[in-house]
Length: 192
View 1 (tube, rainbow, N blue to C red):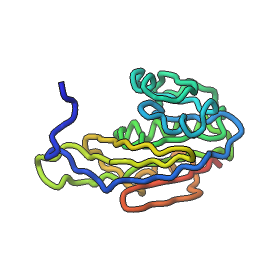
View 2: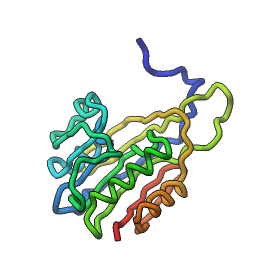
View 3: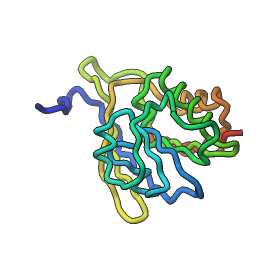
């Protein structure tokens, strides 16, 4: 059975081409939604603890880092455990309530001064026509030693830079750095 919808049911965004450099962190990095390609695990190796509520996604991730089946809205880690957390195209899969709970949990498990790194996409609030059901983002991810071609698709759930920023601010984060190109977003939030 083919799980890929017809192209007429998809709005395909301009390809995102994020360039990832090694993350400056001496301790463990929490990777929210680290299944699938396991980009953060591939970037930082055994320094990463990837969580995803989908076991199959974690099993498919080609990296050798620690992978734990876990719901991001209920992180099973002590307060202030991590210096850095990352979300690589994960928030786009969450409705607003789930997104806020996840961001609150990330805030809780980060140490004071810790960073929350977010790569994601803006998703328009309106579909271009009635046939379209999915928003698809093609990706060409450049890591220091290789490139990974992939794509992520979701049912339409509005998301923009303002929404992500407001949710992180509500959790207690302070915006440290923001970069956007077309619909591609990158944020660095700091726990104060």
